[in-house]
Image (tube, rainbow, N blue to C red; front, side, top):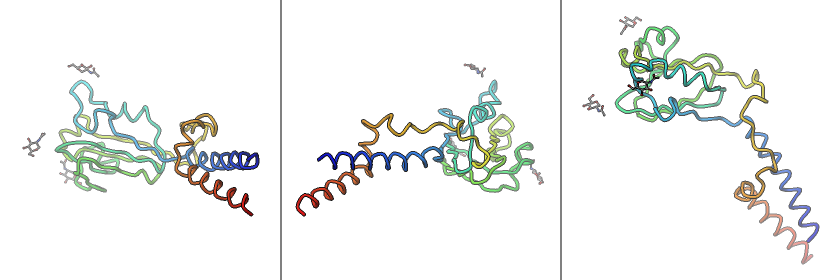
Length: 176
Ligand SMILES: *[C@@H]1O[C@H](CO)[C@@H](O)[C@H](O)[C@H]1NC(C)=O
Ligand SMILES: *[C@@H]1O[C@H](CO)[C@@H](O)[C@H](O)[C@H]1NC(C)=O
Ligand SMILES: *[C@@H]1O[C@H](CO)[C@@H](O)[C@H](O)[C@H]1NC(C)=O
């Protein structure tokens, strides 16, 4: 039983290491505008999306979710963003719940296809940071491997699988 326990802890340790490393750079999903979603800002708040974006850090691999009604999300170039002109869109979405993957570093521009709404502030410019140039310390830290061991790790299906494998291995050994 002693060897089972130490094997179990070794397995837990290995699992904690391997599962926490990818988590440190895991892609994040951002809901554009937070609870406000994607809409024409109030007349006294035309900088709403600029302000929202300024509080976030976007990395390659992250995604933006636009939630809206009776509206659209048009991916445009810089000129289209500043002129609220979506005549030459890069992509157009109007499904009401659009997930856009930030696949490239650099700026990305989004507008409503309605130029009036756009001029009233319904446009978004984000700066996407390359993971290579990112300072890993500044990224939202993943939980330390053992800090949440009690509940978090036991809830993980991989761990349950691990213990089943370990348990059956040690039962096999007992009868050998
Ligand atoms: C805009 O005006 C509304 C009331 O008309 C107010 O509740 C809100 O706080 C104002 N927003 C800003 C950013 O000033
Ligand atoms: C959506 O747009 C249609 C026509 O374009 C209009 O009849 C309807 O009232 C709009 N709905 C909302 C919730 O604004
Ligand atoms: C958008 O730009 C094109 C030129 O690329 C121009 O022909 C068109 O009139 C513009 N549309 C608006 C709404 O300004």
